[in-house]
Length: 544
Image (cartoon, rainbow, N blue to C red; front, top):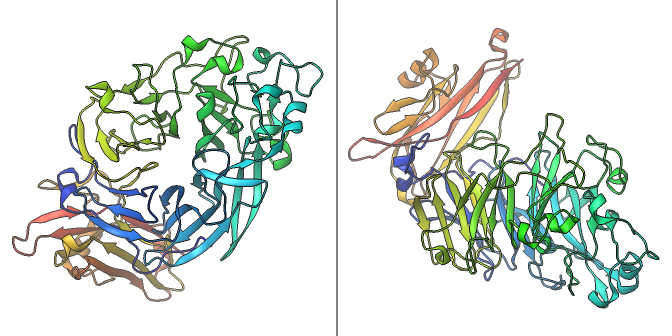
């Protein structure tokens, strides 16, 4: 099951990140680590900006398809195990695993028993649960009865559904919430069948006959993202050239209907964008998206927070051209998306779009991804080109790695110092453990732990390094080595690792309750004694 990290959890930034320590300025790469899993191999890799691999997680199964680094430093990996089957389209998975730094499987959950099969993407949630995309099989007769054109469906029909899984044991999980596209259909093909109505009058429903033509893998959802503040889910719907947003605040019963949840709309679509033709509000000329992947909200703390970014595989810029798109969803203060009757959901255009200077030099007809970084740059994965690169808002490529093999999408992680502990009891006492792993390239570097009880901003400039701590009396204590820290000064071991601890005896003064203690680690070159890197801050609160 998802659990607390061990005492040696990863975290690293190597020499290639040092020019970008702290908040990066224009033209600089963002500090952090890149996680990726080539789809033709059974391994997942974590690399620094120099391309050095800091850790590899081997497996017996190819990815299926996404991988994530959890806040506790463990790997969450979708896999395609033997026996799971191939499903009706690309991207089959069937299994999700949590794996620690050493490769030990801590939790495993299978979802490939007929008639369902997980595919493409997963999404770790703040509560420790995992969202999964999956196909479910319906017969030809069921599809036709639901209003599908009989000439466009084979022996089976495969709409998508979403499940939320709560880990309950080493190899088990409970589905605590689910949503099915099948519950939200409309069609204007056959008045004698279910779901008949006027498509253009119901943008909240999904036309079972769009897109026209034969395709049993109907919607082919290829990415999922979760917004905890809105309690909403964002889906990239490949075959409809759209993104959808649905309400997660519903019960499973409400998600199967048209009322309930924060929106009052049950499991109906709250928002859709990219192709208004799909709901009768546009023509082919109105398509903005084409076979897109990796739709995700820009996270808080990053420029454009709340906007949506994605990789647009078939851009309107021309044939064999992909692009990265950012747009602003028209969400109101209540989490709704206003829509005038008969109109298309806004916005009418994009906020920002990156197309390569030589447009066809960025093209991937399948997979791929894009995520906004804290410094305002965007990390882009061009899947079939085996290329991951970072581009600024002014379209300057400031970092890239190539020759990686086909990669579904890459993740970026700016953290480098880790701790499982978020509080320390003054009455009980004890330790807060910290772990840093800087990789072989930093083996032998000097490290020095500093702290603050005032905050992490503004950062303290140390030459080209920004130390994310505010100078205060506790900072002086750590500087003098007088703070209650064990292992606060030393040399990184042969793997570039170090651990330290903040400790208090029982019955420490209760008046300290409520103080938040922050720490960061400075690394120095052992020959020149120059500071070469400052880690991210890690914080915990003193409680009674």
